[in-house]
Amino acid sequence: MSVKNITVFGAGLMGAGIAQVAAQNGFKVVLSDVTEKALQNGLQIIQKSLARVAKKRFAAVSGQEGDGEGAGWTREVLGNIKTGTDAGQAVSSSDLVVEAIVENLEIKRNLFGFLDRKADPRCIFASNTSSLSIGDIAGTCSAERLTRFGGFHFFNPVPAMKLVEVIKAQHTSQETFDTLVAVAKKMEKVPVSAKDTPGFITGRLLIPYMLEAIRMAERGDASPQDIDTAMELGAGYPMGPFKLLDLVGLDTTTFISNGWREKAERGEIPKELVAKIPMLQKLVDEGKLGRKTGQGFYNVSRYDGPQYRS
Image 1: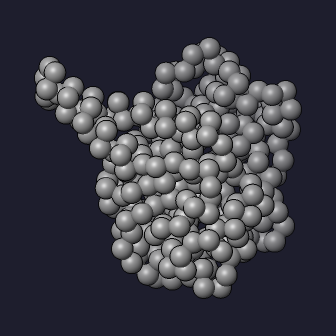
Image 2: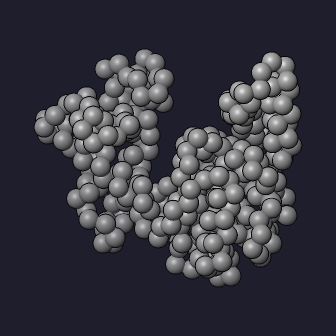
């Protein structure tokens, strides 16, 4: 199936980033959210990001000529993006819908159930979820749509991160999967294939890794700072687990691990991997959520890449 028109739901950092890379690579994009304010915020995110990309892309062209080419390229990309708050209208001519809204199963299911009645039967649906089951999200759609439903997991910041996890759920057709892979490649991303299992590839490895790091600190085996230093200098990781936790958000990590405990009860993953951790819960209860609040495992006075002050 050929994809030319993409609708992205959610104008936050992820949705705006997906819309941007799609528009940069020739797709016609509709960015949709529930309010005009959210859409304007999304467009501002895109404009700022495009300014950085243009500066780098046209760096070899000096003076006003380079500025002009960069401005022209930016206008061309923005010309590929339309916005709207009417969800039904947003998918009226869509070949692919990418959902990047709040990580809440019921809200996602409600959205897709509505869109299933509005979009062309041939339209592919995809969720950018990082932690929820694609099959669960797709549960409100028709049997026919289930064959055209997959996971399309980008990473933040989308314009800079090359990876996309393409998830083939139980009912996803090979044609749908192949189409999502082709779209990812046209967006200049590197797609990897994963089944619809908890966390797919990256989350399945990272969440238990981060939780075990907290358990080590909670037991007093080593300090968060020393664990981070060990993983950065000993294992070559660009960022240790506690810096990563603060970046991801301790509330987000807690939300994911809570959801995974339900999967553990069903035998999908070992229970010990996602057992509750008092140290983590205490920080969340105190509102110390990491970078977003200025406090987490580190006191963050300033963030410029992985630079923290403990």
